[in-house]
Image (tube, rainbow, N blue to C red; front, side, top):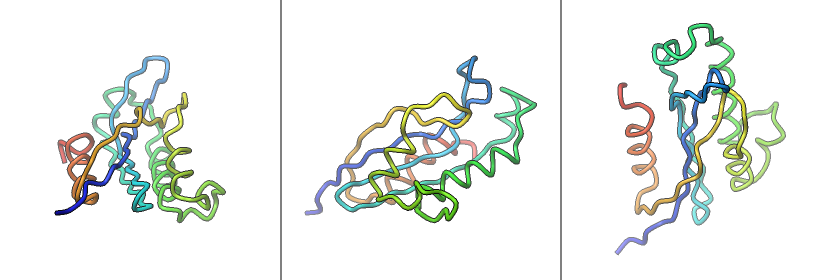
Length: 130
């Protein structure tokens, strides 16, 4: 029998006008301590975002989402955070902040297949219209 792995995840959100607290889900980050794994993927629905704020700088946002993913994966040469260990990167990425890019509260789950669970959560919470 396969063992269930405990994992933690958070939804990455774009909050174009922080004072209004409106957001769209734009990514997912998932961490498993036991496997020392950190998954991250983003998807930006420009149409949905334009409904909240048609003036948002899409290119700037795409660059920052790319940097977020690279930091999560430890591949961003410009970021000292990218060089930290997996748990530290997850904690830094999911820390509460009041900026245009935020994460939800951290949630937990159990899975026998982390990649399958990550893909399911991503489709369910982020890319439902893709």
